[in-house]
Image (cartoon, rainbow over all chains, first blue to last red):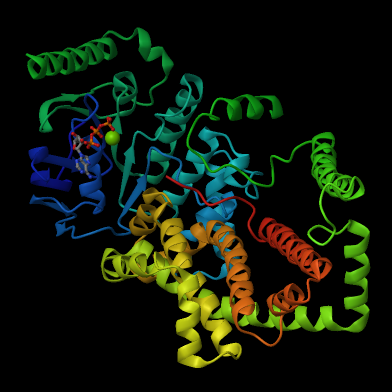
Length: 258
Length: 281
Ligand SMILES: Nc1ncnc2c1ncn2[C@@H]1O[C@H](COP(=O)(O)OP(=O)(O)OP(=O)(O)O)[C@@H](O)[C@H]1O
Ligand SMILES: [Mg+2]
Protein backbone atom coordinates (compact mmCIF):
# COMPACT_ATOMS: atom_id res chain seq x y z
CA UNK A 1 0.00 0.00 0.00
CA UNK A 2 2.68 2.47 -0.78
CA UNK A 3 1.39 5.88 -1.81
CA UNK A 4 3.18 8.41 -3.89
CA UNK A 5 2.71 12.10 -3.20
CA UNK A 6 0.14 13.54 -0.83
CA UNK A 7 -2.98 14.81 -2.54
CA UNK A 8 -4.75 16.38 0.39
CA UNK A 9 -2.55 17.96 2.98
CA UNK A 10 -3.44 19.48 6.34
CA UNK A 11 -0.66 21.49 7.91
CA UNK A 12 -0.81 22.58 11.53
CA UNK A 13 -4.55 23.00 11.44
CA UNK A 14 -6.02 24.32 14.65
CA UNK A 15 -9.51 25.52 15.42
CA UNK A 16 -10.72 27.45 18.42
CA UNK A 17 -14.29 28.43 19.18
CA UNK A 18 -14.21 31.32 21.61
CA UNK A 19 -11.96 30.04 24.35
CA UNK A 20 -12.32 26.32 23.65
CA UNK A 21 -9.78 24.72 21.42
CA UNK A 22 -11.60 22.13 19.35
CA UNK A 23 -8.60 21.06 17.30
CA UNK A 24 -4.95 21.46 18.30
CA UNK A 25 -2.32 21.75 15.56
CA UNK A 26 -3.05 18.81 13.35
CA UNK A 27 -1.14 17.38 10.42
CA UNK A 28 -2.43 14.90 7.94
CA UNK A 29 -1.58 13.78 4.45
CA UNK A 30 -3.88 11.80 2.27
CA UNK A 31 -2.70 10.29 -1.00
CA UNK A 32 -4.59 10.04 -4.27
CA UNK A 33 -7.18 7.31 -4.14
CA UNK A 34 -6.50 6.65 -0.48
CA UNK A 35 -9.27 5.87 1.98
CA UNK A 36 -8.55 7.40 5.38
CA UNK A 37 -10.80 7.25 8.42
CA UNK A 38 -10.83 9.47 11.47
CA UNK A 39 -12.04 7.81 14.65
CA UNK A 40 -12.25 9.13 18.16
CA UNK A 41 -14.58 9.75 21.03
CA UNK A 42 -17.51 12.10 20.71
CA UNK A 43 -16.48 15.72 20.78
CA UNK A 44 -12.84 15.15 19.91
CA UNK A 45 -13.06 17.42 16.88
CA UNK A 46 -13.65 15.05 13.97
CA UNK A 47 -16.50 17.01 12.43
CA UNK A 48 -14.69 20.27 12.99
CA UNK A 49 -11.69 18.95 11.13
CA UNK A 50 -13.80 17.66 8.27
CA UNK A 51 -15.62 20.97 8.04
CA UNK A 52 -12.30 22.73 7.80
CA UNK A 53 -11.32 20.53 4.88
CA UNK A 54 -14.71 21.15 3.30
CA UNK A 55 -14.09 24.87 3.68
CA UNK A 56 -17.18 25.34 5.82
CA UNK A 57 -15.16 26.44 8.86
CA UNK A 58 -12.06 28.57 8.46
CA UNK A 59 -9.18 27.16 10.52
CA UNK A 60 -7.83 29.40 13.26
CA UNK A 61 -4.37 28.60 11.98
CA UNK A 62 -2.76 26.28 9.47
CA UNK A 63 -3.48 25.48 5.86
CA UNK A 64 -5.26 22.86 3.83
CA UNK A 65 -4.00 22.19 0.35
CA UNK A 66 -5.53 20.03 -2.32
CA UNK A 67 -3.32 19.04 -5.21
CA UNK A 68 -0.89 21.72 -4.04
CA UNK A 69 -3.49 24.50 -4.11
CA UNK A 70 -4.58 26.08 -0.85
CA UNK A 71 -8.22 25.63 0.07
CA UNK A 72 -9.89 28.92 0.94
CA UNK A 73 -13.53 27.95 1.22
CA UNK A 74 -16.01 25.41 -0.04
CA UNK A 75 -15.57 24.23 -3.59
CA UNK A 76 -16.59 21.58 -6.03
CA UNK A 77 -13.23 19.84 -5.83
CA UNK A 78 -14.51 18.41 -2.54
CA UNK A 79 -17.78 16.57 -2.05
CA UNK A 80 -19.42 16.23 1.33
CA UNK A 81 -21.85 13.73 2.76
CA UNK A 82 -23.30 14.79 6.09
CA UNK A 83 -24.44 12.68 9.00
CA UNK A 84 -27.88 14.23 9.01
CA UNK A 85 -30.15 13.63 6.11
CA UNK A 86 -29.60 16.68 3.99
CA UNK A 87 -31.66 16.07 0.90
CA UNK A 88 -33.92 18.90 -0.13
CA UNK A 89 -37.37 17.69 0.85
CA UNK A 90 -39.09 19.56 -1.97
CA UNK A 91 -37.10 17.74 -4.65
CA UNK A 92 -37.27 14.15 -5.82
CA UNK A 93 -34.25 11.87 -5.61
CA UNK A 94 -33.30 12.65 -9.20
CA UNK A 95 -33.89 16.37 -8.77
CA UNK A 96 -31.70 16.36 -5.67
CA UNK A 97 -28.84 14.98 -7.72
CA UNK A 98 -29.59 17.32 -10.61
CA UNK A 99 -29.51 20.24 -8.20
CA UNK A 100 -25.75 19.77 -7.94
CA UNK A 101 -25.40 19.92 -11.72
CA UNK A 102 -27.59 22.90 -12.44
CA UNK A 103 -24.95 25.46 -13.18
CA UNK A 104 -22.89 23.36 -15.52
CA UNK A 105 -23.21 25.26 -18.78
CA UNK A 106 -22.14 22.36 -20.96
CA UNK A 107 -24.82 20.07 -19.62
CA UNK A 108 -28.26 20.40 -21.19
CA UNK A 109 -31.27 19.55 -19.08
CA UNK A 110 -31.89 16.21 -20.63
CA UNK A 111 -28.32 15.01 -20.16
CA UNK A 112 -28.37 16.28 -16.62
CA UNK A 113 -31.34 14.12 -15.92
CA UNK A 114 -29.73 11.14 -17.62
CA UNK A 115 -26.63 11.60 -15.52
CA UNK A 116 -28.64 11.79 -12.32
CA UNK A 117 -30.48 8.60 -13.20
CA UNK A 118 -27.23 6.86 -13.98
CA UNK A 119 -25.79 7.85 -10.61
CA UNK A 120 -28.91 6.73 -8.80
CA UNK A 121 -28.58 3.37 -10.52
CA UNK A 122 -24.98 3.17 -9.35
CA UNK A 123 -26.03 3.67 -5.74
CA UNK A 124 -28.74 1.04 -6.13
CA UNK A 125 -31.71 3.35 -6.41
CA UNK A 126 -32.69 2.67 -10.01
CA UNK A 127 -36.45 3.08 -10.28
CA UNK A 128 -36.78 5.30 -7.24
CA UNK A 129 -35.73 8.49 -8.99
CA UNK A 130 -39.12 10.14 -8.63
CA UNK A 131 -39.51 9.41 -4.92
CA UNK A 132 -39.33 12.32 -2.51
CA UNK A 133 -36.97 12.10 0.47
CA UNK A 134 -39.83 11.47 2.89
CA UNK A 135 -40.75 8.45 0.82
CA UNK A 136 -37.25 6.99 1.15
CA UNK A 137 -35.69 5.19 4.09
CA UNK A 138 -32.68 6.67 5.87
CA UNK A 139 -30.33 4.38 3.99
CA UNK A 140 -31.87 5.32 0.67
CA UNK A 141 -31.61 9.00 1.49
CA UNK A 142 -27.91 8.62 2.21
CA UNK A 143 -27.51 6.82 -1.11
CA UNK A 144 -29.01 9.84 -2.84
CA UNK A 145 -26.74 12.13 -0.83
CA UNK A 146 -23.75 10.11 -1.97
CA UNK A 147 -24.94 10.24 -5.57
CA UNK A 148 -25.34 13.99 -5.24
CA UNK A 149 -21.82 14.37 -3.84
CA UNK A 150 -20.35 12.20 -6.59
CA UNK A 151 -22.31 13.87 -9.40
CA UNK A 152 -19.90 16.75 -9.89
CA UNK A 153 -16.85 14.51 -9.66
CA UNK A 154 -15.02 15.97 -6.68
CA UNK A 155 -11.43 14.96 -6.15
CA UNK A 156 -12.01 14.22 -2.51
CA UNK A 157 -15.10 12.82 -0.85
CA UNK A 158 -15.59 13.94 2.74
CA UNK A 159 -17.98 11.90 4.82
CA UNK A 160 -19.07 12.77 8.34
CA UNK A 161 -20.53 9.67 9.96
CA UNK A 162 -22.67 9.11 6.89
CA UNK A 163 -24.02 5.81 8.19
CA UNK A 164 -24.27 6.83 11.83
CA UNK A 165 -28.05 6.92 11.86
CA UNK A 166 -28.55 3.62 10.08
CA UNK A 167 -29.26 0.22 11.57
CA UNK A 168 -26.46 -2.35 11.59
CA UNK A 169 -27.66 -4.26 8.54
CA UNK A 170 -28.24 -1.26 6.33
CA UNK A 171 -24.87 0.02 7.47
CA UNK A 172 -23.10 -3.05 6.16
CA UNK A 173 -24.79 -2.79 2.82
CA UNK A 174 -23.81 0.86 2.61
CA UNK A 175 -20.20 0.11 3.53
CA UNK A 176 -19.91 -2.35 0.67
CA UNK A 177 -21.57 0.09 -1.67
CA UNK A 178 -19.10 2.77 -0.66
CA UNK A 179 -16.12 0.47 -1.21
CA UNK A 180 -17.43 -0.34 -4.64
CA UNK A 181 -17.94 3.32 -5.55
CA UNK A 182 -14.53 4.19 -4.17
CA UNK A 183 -12.94 1.65 -6.49
CA UNK A 184 -15.03 2.59 -9.51
CA UNK A 185 -14.59 6.33 -9.19
CA UNK A 186 -11.01 6.17 -7.94
CA UNK A 187 -11.96 8.44 -5.08
CA UNK A 188 -9.92 9.91 -2.31
CA UNK A 189 -11.98 9.58 0.84
CA UNK A 190 -11.73 11.16 4.27
CA UNK A 191 -14.24 9.36 6.41
CA UNK A 192 -15.33 10.17 9.96
CA UNK A 193 -16.89 7.48 12.10
CA UNK A 194 -17.46 6.34 15.67
CA UNK A 195 -17.40 2.77 14.55
CA UNK A 196 -13.95 1.22 14.68
CA UNK A 197 -14.86 -1.95 12.79
CA UNK A 198 -16.31 0.21 10.07
CA UNK A 199 -13.15 2.29 9.89
CA UNK A 200 -10.88 -0.75 9.70
CA UNK A 201 -13.07 -2.53 7.19
CA UNK A 202 -13.17 0.42 4.81
CA UNK A 203 -9.82 2.14 5.17
CA UNK A 204 -6.25 2.05 4.03
CA UNK A 205 -5.38 3.99 7.14
CA UNK A 206 -7.17 4.73 10.39
CA UNK A 207 -6.36 7.89 12.30
CA UNK A 208 -7.16 7.71 15.98
CA UNK A 209 -7.83 11.11 17.45
CA UNK A 210 -7.93 12.15 21.05
CA UNK A 211 -9.69 15.19 22.44
CA UNK A 212 -9.95 17.85 23.83
CA UNK A 213 -8.36 19.62 22.04
CA UNK A 214 -8.51 17.19 19.15
CA UNK A 215 -5.19 15.84 18.03
CA UNK A 216 -3.74 12.95 16.15
CA UNK A 217 -2.98 10.17 18.56
CA UNK A 218 -2.09 7.27 16.37
CA UNK A 219 -2.04 6.22 12.74
CA UNK A 220 -2.89 2.62 12.05
CA UNK A 221 -2.16 1.42 8.51
CA UNK A 222 -4.61 -1.27 7.48
CA UNK A 223 -2.63 -3.60 5.26
CA UNK A 224 -5.53 -5.94 4.60
CA UNK A 225 -5.89 -7.12 1.02
CA UNK A 226 -8.71 -5.92 -1.18
CA UNK A 227 -11.33 -6.70 -2.20
CA UNK A 228 -12.45 -7.22 1.35
CA UNK A 229 -15.51 -9.02 2.51
CA UNK A 230 -17.17 -10.03 5.73
CA UNK A 231 -14.87 -13.02 6.17
CA UNK A 232 -12.42 -10.46 7.51
CA UNK A 233 -14.15 -10.72 10.85
CA UNK A 234 -12.19 -13.88 11.53
CA UNK A 235 -8.96 -12.51 10.06
CA UNK A 236 -6.23 -12.12 12.65
CA UNK A 237 -4.84 -8.89 11.18
CA UNK A 238 -8.29 -7.32 11.06
CA UNK A 239 -8.91 -8.16 14.69
CA UNK A 240 -5.52 -6.87 15.68
CA UNK A 241 -6.10 -3.58 13.91
CA UNK A 242 -9.46 -3.16 15.62
CA UNK A 243 -7.97 -4.03 19.00
CA UNK A 244 -5.18 -1.56 18.50
CA UNK A 245 -7.60 1.21 17.65
CA UNK A 246 -9.83 0.40 20.62
CA UNK A 247 -6.82 0.37 22.90
CA UNK A 248 -5.72 3.79 21.69
CA UNK A 249 -9.14 5.29 22.09
CA UNK A 250 -9.61 3.91 25.58
CA UNK A 251 -6.24 5.02 26.84
CA UNK A 252 -6.89 8.40 25.28
CA UNK A 253 -10.20 8.57 27.08
CA UNK A 254 -8.58 7.44 30.33
CA UNK A 255 -5.88 10.08 30.20
CA UNK A 256 -8.52 12.66 29.45
CA UNK A 257 -10.53 11.61 32.49
CA UNK A 258 -7.66 11.31 34.99
CA UNK B 1 -39.01 -5.31 -1.31
CA UNK B 2 -42.00 -3.26 -0.21
CA UNK B 3 -41.86 -4.93 3.14
CA UNK B 4 -38.20 -4.12 3.58
CA UNK B 5 -38.81 -0.49 2.67
CA UNK B 6 -41.61 -0.31 5.19
CA UNK B 7 -39.44 -1.69 7.95
CA UNK B 8 -36.56 0.52 7.07
CA UNK B 9 -38.79 3.49 7.13
CA UNK B 10 -40.05 2.76 10.61
CA UNK B 11 -36.54 2.57 11.92
CA UNK B 12 -35.94 6.17 10.92
CA UNK B 13 -39.10 7.63 12.35
CA UNK B 14 -37.39 9.06 15.40
CA UNK B 15 -34.95 11.11 13.39
CA UNK B 16 -35.34 14.77 12.80
CA UNK B 17 -37.00 14.95 9.46
CA UNK B 18 -39.64 17.27 8.17
CA UNK B 19 -43.09 15.97 8.86
CA UNK B 20 -44.63 15.30 5.51
CA UNK B 21 -47.82 17.21 5.11
CA UNK B 22 -49.55 15.43 2.30
CA UNK B 23 -48.35 11.83 2.25
CA UNK B 24 -49.51 11.02 5.77
CA UNK B 25 -53.11 11.64 5.05
CA UNK B 26 -55.49 10.60 7.73
CA UNK B 27 -57.64 7.71 6.56
CA UNK B 28 -60.98 8.35 4.98
CA UNK B 29 -62.80 7.59 8.19
CA UNK B 30 -60.71 9.96 10.22
CA UNK B 31 -61.14 12.70 7.71
CA UNK B 32 -64.92 12.48 7.50
CA UNK B 33 -65.05 12.14 11.26
CA UNK B 34 -63.07 15.32 11.79
CA UNK B 35 -65.16 17.22 9.25
CA UNK B 36 -68.26 16.03 11.05
CA UNK B 37 -66.83 17.19 14.37
CA UNK B 38 -66.08 20.64 12.95
CA UNK B 39 -69.55 21.01 11.48
CA UNK B 40 -71.12 19.80 14.72
CA UNK B 41 -69.38 22.45 16.77
CA UNK B 42 -70.89 25.10 14.53
CA UNK B 43 -74.34 23.64 14.97
CA UNK B 44 -73.90 23.48 18.73
CA UNK B 45 -73.00 27.16 18.76
CA UNK B 46 -75.97 28.00 16.57
CA UNK B 47 -78.25 25.84 18.74
CA UNK B 48 -77.10 27.56 21.93
CA UNK B 49 -77.73 30.95 20.37
CA UNK B 50 -81.19 29.92 19.23
CA UNK B 51 -82.00 28.44 22.65
CA UNK B 52 -80.93 31.54 24.54
CA UNK B 53 -83.09 33.77 22.37
CA UNK B 54 -85.99 31.30 22.37
CA UNK B 55 -86.02 31.12 26.16
CA UNK B 56 -85.77 34.92 26.24
CA UNK B 57 -82.82 34.87 28.60
CA UNK B 58 -81.46 37.96 26.93
CA UNK B 59 -83.35 40.97 25.62
CA UNK B 60 -83.54 40.74 21.82
CA UNK B 61 -82.16 44.23 21.58
CA UNK B 62 -78.87 42.78 22.82
CA UNK B 63 -79.11 39.39 21.19
CA UNK B 64 -81.60 38.96 18.37
CA UNK B 65 -82.45 35.43 17.28
CA UNK B 66 -80.70 33.74 14.35
CA UNK B 67 -83.68 34.09 12.08
CA UNK B 68 -83.85 37.86 12.59
CA UNK B 69 -80.16 38.21 11.84
CA UNK B 70 -80.47 36.09 8.71
CA UNK B 71 -83.45 38.09 7.51
CA UNK B 72 -81.55 41.32 8.03
CA UNK B 73 -78.53 39.96 6.18
CA UNK B 74 -80.82 38.93 3.36
CA UNK B 75 -82.23 42.46 3.16
CA UNK B 76 -78.78 44.01 3.18
CA UNK B 77 -77.63 41.61 0.52
CA UNK B 78 -80.56 42.24 -1.81
CA UNK B 79 -80.39 45.98 -1.12
CA UNK B 80 -76.78 45.93 -2.29
CA UNK B 81 -75.28 47.35 0.91
CA UNK B 82 -73.63 44.10 1.93
CA UNK B 83 -71.98 43.61 -1.43
CA UNK B 84 -70.82 47.21 -1.50
CA UNK B 85 -69.42 47.10 2.04
CA UNK B 86 -67.71 43.82 1.37
CA UNK B 87 -66.23 45.08 -1.86
CA UNK B 88 -64.80 48.19 -0.22
CA UNK B 89 -63.35 46.29 2.74
CA UNK B 90 -61.86 43.50 0.64
CA UNK B 91 -60.26 46.12 -1.58
CA UNK B 92 -58.71 47.91 1.41
CA UNK B 93 -57.40 44.75 2.97
CA UNK B 94 -56.15 43.62 -0.41
CA UNK B 95 -54.12 46.75 -1.00
CA UNK B 96 -52.88 47.21 2.57
CA UNK B 97 -51.97 43.58 3.03
CA UNK B 98 -50.25 43.30 -0.33
CA UNK B 99 -48.17 46.41 0.36
CA UNK B 100 -47.12 45.09 3.74
CA UNK B 101 -46.30 41.63 2.40
CA UNK B 102 -44.38 42.82 -0.63
CA UNK B 103 -42.06 44.81 1.62
CA UNK B 104 -41.98 42.46 4.62
CA UNK B 105 -41.13 39.34 2.63
CA UNK B 106 -37.74 40.35 1.24
CA UNK B 107 -36.82 42.21 4.41
CA UNK B 108 -37.77 39.26 6.64
CA UNK B 109 -35.86 36.82 4.46
CA UNK B 110 -32.74 38.98 4.45
CA UNK B 111 -32.96 39.50 8.20
CA UNK B 112 -33.37 35.79 8.76
CA UNK B 113 -30.37 35.00 6.64
CA UNK B 114 -27.90 37.80 7.32
CA UNK B 115 -26.88 39.01 10.76
CA UNK B 116 -26.17 42.53 9.59
CA UNK B 117 -29.69 42.99 8.26
CA UNK B 118 -31.10 41.68 11.50
CA UNK B 119 -28.82 43.92 13.54
CA UNK B 120 -29.99 46.98 11.66
CA UNK B 121 -33.72 46.32 11.53
CA UNK B 122 -34.72 43.89 14.24
CA UNK B 123 -34.53 46.22 17.27
CA UNK B 124 -36.36 49.01 15.47
CA UNK B 125 -39.09 46.73 14.26
CA UNK B 126 -39.44 45.11 17.65
CA UNK B 127 -39.76 48.58 19.13
CA UNK B 128 -42.49 49.73 16.77
CA UNK B 129 -44.31 46.45 16.94
CA UNK B 130 -45.03 46.97 20.61
CA UNK B 131 -46.77 50.26 19.99
CA UNK B 132 -50.52 49.75 20.06
CA UNK B 133 -51.84 49.92 16.52
CA UNK B 134 -55.10 51.45 17.73
CA UNK B 135 -53.19 54.49 18.91
CA UNK B 136 -52.04 55.03 15.35
CA UNK B 137 -55.61 55.54 14.21
CA UNK B 138 -55.89 59.18 15.35
CA UNK B 139 -52.34 59.83 14.21
CA UNK B 140 -52.90 58.48 10.74
CA UNK B 141 -56.09 60.52 10.45
CA UNK B 142 -54.03 63.60 11.20
CA UNK B 143 -51.46 62.55 8.66
CA UNK B 144 -53.54 61.48 5.70
CA UNK B 145 -57.19 62.08 6.52
CA UNK B 146 -59.92 59.45 6.54
CA UNK B 147 -59.83 58.15 2.99
CA UNK B 148 -58.63 54.76 1.78
CA UNK B 149 -55.01 55.81 2.20
CA UNK B 150 -55.47 55.93 5.94
CA UNK B 151 -56.98 52.43 5.95
CA UNK B 152 -54.03 51.11 3.96
CA UNK B 153 -51.70 52.77 6.40
CA UNK B 154 -53.36 51.25 9.47
CA UNK B 155 -53.38 47.79 7.90
CA UNK B 156 -49.76 48.29 6.94
CA UNK B 157 -48.70 49.36 10.42
CA UNK B 158 -50.65 46.56 12.04
CA UNK B 159 -49.34 43.87 9.72
CA UNK B 160 -45.93 44.76 8.34
CA UNK B 161 -43.87 44.76 11.52
CA UNK B 162 -45.34 41.51 12.78
CA UNK B 163 -44.86 39.92 9.38
CA UNK B 164 -41.21 40.85 9.18
CA UNK B 165 -40.51 39.20 12.50
CA UNK B 166 -42.50 36.10 11.57
CA UNK B 167 -40.72 35.76 8.24
CA UNK B 168 -37.35 36.31 9.90
CA UNK B 169 -38.10 33.56 12.33
CA UNK B 170 -39.28 31.21 9.56
CA UNK B 171 -36.03 31.64 7.69
CA UNK B 172 -33.88 31.25 10.80
CA UNK B 173 -35.38 27.90 11.56
CA UNK B 174 -34.36 26.10 8.42
CA UNK B 175 -31.52 23.65 9.10
CA UNK B 176 -28.01 24.97 8.67
CA UNK B 177 -27.09 21.69 6.95
CA UNK B 178 -29.22 22.56 3.92
CA UNK B 179 -27.28 25.79 3.55
CA UNK B 180 -24.00 23.94 4.05
CA UNK B 181 -24.95 21.61 1.22
CA UNK B 182 -25.33 24.64 -1.01
CA UNK B 183 -21.95 25.92 0.09
CA UNK B 184 -20.20 22.61 -0.58
CA UNK B 185 -21.77 22.67 -4.04
CA UNK B 186 -19.97 25.95 -4.57
CA UNK B 187 -23.12 28.07 -4.79
CA UNK B 188 -22.86 31.82 -4.27
CA UNK B 189 -24.68 33.55 -1.41
CA UNK B 190 -27.28 34.73 -3.82
CA UNK B 191 -27.93 31.32 -5.31
CA UNK B 192 -28.14 29.82 -1.83
CA UNK B 193 -30.70 32.44 -0.93
CA UNK B 194 -32.73 31.85 -4.09
CA UNK B 195 -32.54 28.12 -4.43
CA UNK B 196 -32.31 26.93 -0.86
CA UNK B 197 -33.31 29.51 1.74
CA UNK B 198 -36.39 30.85 0.00
CA UNK B 199 -37.55 27.48 -1.19
CA UNK B 200 -36.96 25.71 2.12
CA UNK B 201 -38.79 28.35 4.11
CA UNK B 202 -41.61 28.85 1.59
CA UNK B 203 -44.17 26.60 3.32
CA UNK B 204 -43.54 28.29 6.67
CA UNK B 205 -43.69 31.73 5.05
CA UNK B 206 -47.01 30.79 3.53
CA UNK B 207 -48.37 29.82 6.94
CA UNK B 208 -47.19 33.13 8.38
CA UNK B 209 -48.94 34.88 5.53
CA UNK B 210 -52.18 33.13 6.42
CA UNK B 211 -51.89 34.15 10.05
CA UNK B 212 -51.07 37.75 9.26
CA UNK B 213 -53.98 38.09 6.85
CA UNK B 214 -56.25 37.62 9.86
CA UNK B 215 -54.57 40.53 11.60
CA UNK B 216 -54.97 42.71 8.53
CA UNK B 217 -58.73 42.18 8.73
CA UNK B 218 -58.82 43.06 12.40
CA UNK B 219 -56.99 46.32 11.85
CA UNK B 220 -59.12 47.21 8.88
CA UNK B 221 -62.32 46.87 10.87
CA UNK B 222 -60.80 48.89 13.70
CA UNK B 223 -59.92 51.65 11.26
CA UNK B 224 -63.38 51.56 9.69
CA UNK B 225 -65.09 51.68 13.05
CA UNK B 226 -63.36 54.90 13.95
CA UNK B 227 -63.47 56.92 10.79
CA UNK B 228 -64.95 55.79 7.52
CA UNK B 229 -67.83 56.41 5.19
CA UNK B 230 -68.00 52.90 3.81
CA UNK B 231 -66.96 49.34 4.54
CA UNK B 232 -68.02 46.60 6.92
CA UNK B 233 -66.72 48.39 10.00
CA UNK B 234 -68.50 51.60 9.02
CA UNK B 235 -71.81 49.75 8.67
CA UNK B 236 -71.32 48.28 12.12
CA UNK B 237 -70.85 51.74 13.67
CA UNK B 238 -73.93 53.04 11.93
CA UNK B 239 -75.89 50.02 13.09
CA UNK B 240 -74.84 50.70 16.65
CA UNK B 241 -76.18 54.23 16.36
CA UNK B 242 -79.60 52.89 15.36
CA UNK B 243 -79.48 49.97 17.79
CA UNK B 244 -79.62 47.60 14.82
CA UNK B 245 -78.11 44.67 16.64
CA UNK B 246 -79.14 42.29 13.84
CA UNK B 247 -76.84 44.13 11.45
CA UNK B 248 -73.92 44.13 13.87
CA UNK B 249 -74.18 40.42 14.53
CA UNK B 250 -74.86 39.68 10.90
CA UNK B 251 -71.70 41.53 9.87
CA UNK B 252 -69.69 39.79 12.54
CA UNK B 253 -70.86 36.49 11.08
CA UNK B 254 -69.90 37.66 7.61
CA UNK B 255 -66.41 38.60 8.84
CA UNK B 256 -66.02 35.26 10.58
CA UNK B 257 -67.14 33.31 7.52
CA UNK B 258 -64.90 35.35 5.26
CA UNK B 259 -61.92 34.58 7.49
CA UNK B 260 -62.78 30.91 7.68
CA UNK B 261 -63.20 30.65 3.92
CA UNK B 262 -60.00 32.48 3.00
CA UNK B 263 -58.00 30.51 5.52
CA UNK B 264 -59.31 27.22 4.17
CA UNK B 265 -58.59 28.27 0.62
CA UNK B 266 -55.08 29.40 1.48
CA UNK B 267 -54.46 26.15 3.34
CA UNK B 268 -55.53 24.11 0.33
CA UNK B 269 -53.43 26.25 -1.96
CA UNK B 270 -50.46 25.77 0.34
CA UNK B 271 -50.93 22.02 0.31
CA UNK B 272 -51.07 22.13 -3.49
CA UNK B 273 -47.97 24.26 -3.84
CA UNK B 274 -45.82 22.66 -1.16
CA UNK B 275 -45.74 18.94 -0.80
CA UNK B 276 -43.92 19.04 2.52
CA UNK B 277 -43.71 21.46 5.39
CA UNK B 278 -40.60 23.57 5.92
CA UNK B 279 -37.80 21.47 7.36
CA UNK B 280 -36.58 22.88 10.62
CA UNK B 281 -33.74 22.54 13.08
N1 LIG C 1 -19.72 26.05 16.40
C1 LIG C 1 -19.13 25.69 17.56
N2 LIG C 1 -19.04 26.58 18.57
C2 LIG C 1 -18.45 26.24 19.73
N3 LIG C 1 -17.91 25.04 19.98
C3 LIG C 1 -17.98 24.11 19.01
C4 LIG C 1 -18.59 24.37 17.75
N4 LIG C 1 -18.53 23.27 16.98
C5 LIG C 1 -17.89 22.36 17.75
N5 LIG C 1 -17.55 22.85 18.94
C6 LIG C 1 -16.83 22.15 20.00
O1 LIG C 1 -15.67 21.59 19.43
C7 LIG C 1 -15.44 20.29 19.92
C8 LIG C 1 -15.35 19.31 18.77
O2 LIG C 1 -16.63 19.19 18.19
P1 LIG C 1 -16.89 18.24 16.94
O3 LIG C 1 -18.29 18.43 16.53
O4 LIG C 1 -15.83 18.47 15.93
O5 LIG C 1 -16.69 16.80 17.59
P2 LIG C 1 -16.86 15.37 16.92
O6 LIG C 1 -15.59 14.65 17.11
O7 LIG C 1 -17.36 15.49 15.55
O8 LIG C 1 -17.96 14.71 17.86
P3 LIG C 1 -19.11 13.67 17.45
O9 LIG C 1 -18.42 12.39 17.27
O10 LIG C 1 -19.99 13.67 18.65
O11 LIG C 1 -19.77 14.18 16.23
C9 LIG C 1 -16.54 20.00 20.91
O12 LIG C 1 -16.05 20.23 22.20
C10 LIG C 1 -17.61 20.99 20.55
O13 LIG C 1 -18.32 21.35 21.71
MG1 LIG D 1 -19.25 15.02 14.60
